[in-house]
Length: 547
Ligand SMILES: CC(=O)SCCNC(=O)CCNC(=O)[C@H](O)C(C)(C)COP(=O)(O)OP(=O)(O)OC[C@H]1O[C@@H](n2cnc3c(N)ncnc32)[C@H](O)[C@@H]1OP(=O)(O)O
Ligand SMILES: CC(=O)C(=O)O
Image (cartoon, rainbow, N blue to C red):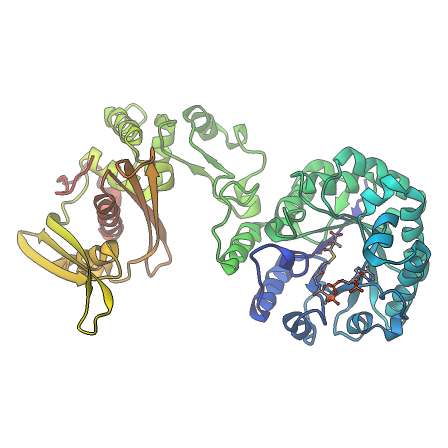
């Protein structure tokens, strides 16, 4: 079967910029365009030249990548010619390869929002498209409110499509602007549009207000459109746009689509999808969504013992595609839902190989389940699981013992009468029989304890020099100030490895100290020459064995 070309149009830098709480700087735009070029989308809509200084500056630079660099704007304003409309001319004279103009396909919206007649608006569409085409721009028309407009007045909505195409638009994009259209309606309405326009000149721009933007994009493709618009990680106005990070692998990997269509994105490119999606979140300074389809940390993770047992026999028992195909990783986790299969996999990840009938496995499983019942959660704290496993298996070296620690917070007036907060911590540890005491000030008790604990580890100090804390999360379990506190600490080292440790206690400082202690212990385990294979080696319980 010969495959039809599907074009991927990215609007992260335009509709994505309309997301509440998101403001792109010029540097952000340049970096995000780089990610999109790496992925291989066909069109990059960079923003609206003339609407704000960042977008104007962005369009002063011509992008050299393969994607069609597209400027967004609106059709000429009522009462002016396109040539006399600075907005239209801003796009026409920009460094963009293509110009995408928004127009309204709903007669009600034209009359109400634009204060124009439907005939004037059709003339505006035609005039604008002709000006851009004459200037050599590939021209697109985004028909706002297309589906709602079509339901109310199909003849006018179709007139807009016809007018844009006859004026020379390369693409007419059907927008589900309010995001309320159902996939069955999209399929039916696109079918009717095909009577006046060929599918290879039609696009779809769905919004996610009913959680169906991707489903609507697929419905439109199945019905006949050949351009699909969306954004990285589903950014966009209100609930967002169609998530290209979900849509692209579906189009490339799922046989129904892969047999019928070809996109500009080769299957090998998808192996970068997870890292591109996460690099984008990094730039937005937000945590990646764990449950994101294909690329989330949980997308190929399983906690359930029954699933883990089957997965280890054949991964396809619980995976719809392989994690490698989208650059993600499989994770078989340890928790209250786990069985021995989960444990064996998690242990192997830390270089510990046991037989399934090893009696120590039952003991470790029971310990994990008991501790999870008290508030620990090992599926998000794999480094603490490694420390616990070594402890229960009797293979944890006795690096250092904590004899005592104290944290003090004082709020007082200084000599100038100003209110100041002073935080200090003292940690006393024993390393190879030698007592070491460290004192540190911090911007809070946990910071002070962290600094004091790491200040002097005697013979181990050099091994933790590159250890850095990057995140600290506190969760109160069961509510109230007397409740149990769970602390998660994320650390990283010079090699770029990141790990999470956990502490649980009714006292937030104790919980934090436990998580800090485990982070250092994990780092020492990592750097312990024979720790990874020493399941049967020397073993002492650490002094701060908790729980
Ligand atoms: C569905 C979508 O996502 S469309 C994209 C929406 N994105 C944005 O609006 C972000 C960028 N926008 C902006 O920065 C500003 O709105 C600007 C610079 C474009 C315009 O700002 P202003 O001139 O102050 O106008 P304002 O934003 O208040 O109103 C929009 C104007 O455009 C007119 N307009 C809206 N759509 C169209 C259209 N398709 N064709 C012609 N005129 C239009 C409106 O009638 C209104 O005109 P009025 O000022 O005479 O009432
Ligand atoms: C054009 C656009 O972003 C919309 O109609 O949603």
